[in-house]
Length: 260
Image (tube, rainbow, N blue to C red):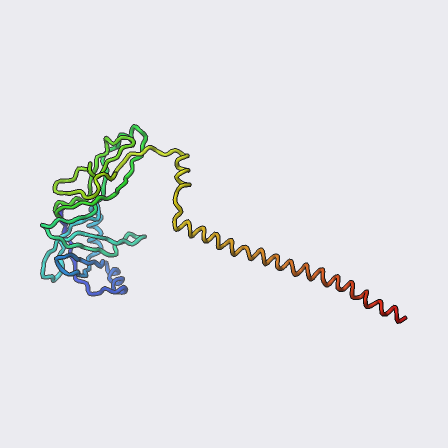
C-alpha cells in the first residue's frame, strides 16, 4: 500500500462544544495512537481527509503523518477508523494508528469480485457475498486496499472458500480456511421465500410492536367497560324510580279512602 501525505496540528480542545466549533471552521478532530508513543489529539483539514478517503478504494489508507511543531517530523500511520455523519456523510472524527515500517500489522480488507460467474450466467443462480471483508496481515508497504477474487468459473451451488483465495505477495490471509467467502446459490421459489419469511425469528423491533399493540388493546378495553358502566346506571335509574313511583301513590291513596 502506497503511503500518502497528511498534515495535522496538535489539538488542545477536546470538549463537546469546542469540537463542534472546530468542525465549523472546516477542521476535523483526530487521534493518533500506537505503542510507539502516547496517544495525541490532533486536528486535520476536513477537505484533505475527505478527498484522501474518496480517492481510495477503501478506508484502509496508509499516511505519512506530519504534525506541526512535533519533534518527529513524520510518522507512518494507518487510517484505523472514520466516523461519518449519518445523513450528510461528513467526516466527524478520524482514528490513526501509528505503525513501524518493519512491523507487520493486521487489518480487515474488503473483498471484491471480478468477472461473471458461470453459475449466474448459465445456471440462473445468485452470486452471494458471505464475507464482505477478510483479515490479512502484512508489512505496511505490502498491505492491500482490497482483495480481488475471480468468480468466472464459479458454478451453481459452489463456493469459494477462504483457503482458496490467492493472497498478494507478502500478504497472509487469516481465519478458518474452510469458511465460504463467495458462493452461487440457486434462486428461491415463491414458496421458499414465504417459508423463509414465516420461519424468520422475531426481532426486538417486532416484540416492541407487539407490545405496543397489546397496550393499545388494553387501553381500549376499559373504554368498552365505561360505556357499559354508563348504560347500567341509566337502566337502574330508569326502572327503579318508576316502580317506586307507581307503588308509593297506591299506598298513600288507601289511607285517604279509609278516612272517608
